[in-house]
Figure 1 (tube, rainbow, N blue to C red):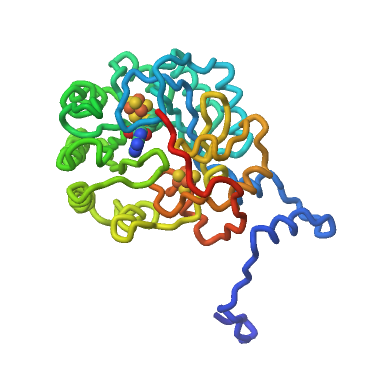
Figure 2: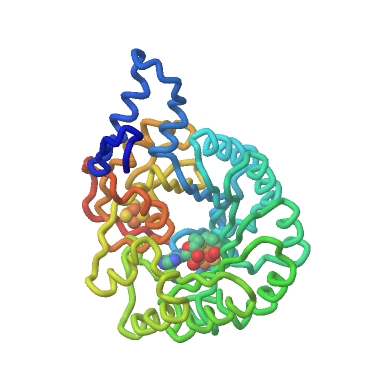
Length: 348
Ligand SMILES: C[S@@+](CC[C@H](N)C(=O)[O-])C[C@H]1O[C@@H](n2cnc3c(N)ncnc32)[C@H](O)[C@@H]1O
Ligand code: SF4
Ligand code: SF4
């Protein structure tokens, strides 16, 4: 590269600036830079995704799940709207309603509509689809839902799960016909016989849904898969096409090969899990390990949690957190977390 004078400009050794230096430069009065500090913090530490529990109760009781109860009331709509406002204020990019079963919330369409009015990049929902009917799907269309993840564990019901193709096929057909939003069909490997997950992937393709495969985690977020499961996993990967399956630096493959896939978990910063009481946790599987009320959460919390090492990261299988953390893998994580080195097993 040459200037008009002909002098060579070095193209190597480009300027690099750490995120901390960027912040102190931006706040330096002498430089009189007109930098929006809020926007800068958002860029450096803001949530890419928040999952918001709207009701803990579920209509099903999958044997592998510790994220539901059978009795609790839906979170009041006004309370949830205040939480949505706060997530927006923190700079959250995408919002996903979860539970329990979010379709059990009587005002779920109103909440989706409200979130859309706040201009999140994406407003999504995870559902077991059991409570959907044509009228409800049309209402979700009208509310502006932008994506639904439906979890299907296999083909035939067993003692662990009834979230399987056989009873769900009519619902899935109706969904394919009626939904104006994209549907992601997630199979959880490990909940049924491994070959069944392959059939779920095939069904997803047939319905025009996007197939996705999750791997069963135990209460501490670690992977559980026997030999047969591992073989099925390899086959699923082949079916989905290797590149598309290589989510978050191919963590599943690395865990299966070597037992671990260390990463810098940015939960509490790039990803927020907000429970029914309005508390932020790192993720659904570490509830109580770190906890702070969302309404008190601020930019300093986002920054601290960004830099906090998570002791459970090596064999973690929480795909959505790995995905949201992947962009910042190159940045440091110097803070040790003073707490339990091993995570408590959560009870269902
Ligand atoms: C807790 S559910 C809530 C939404 C809804 N009830 C559903 O099942 O889709 C959210 C997701 O977590 C998944 N999940 C729950 N327990 C799991 C486990 N032990 N391992 C892997 N995924 C799990 C479910 O399959 C679902 O995709
Ligand atoms: S995975 Fe979803 S459907 Fe199954 S018990 Fe948990 S919350 Fe309910
Ligand atoms: S590494 Fe992060 S996402 Fe995984 S279990 Fe720990 S806190 Fe949760």
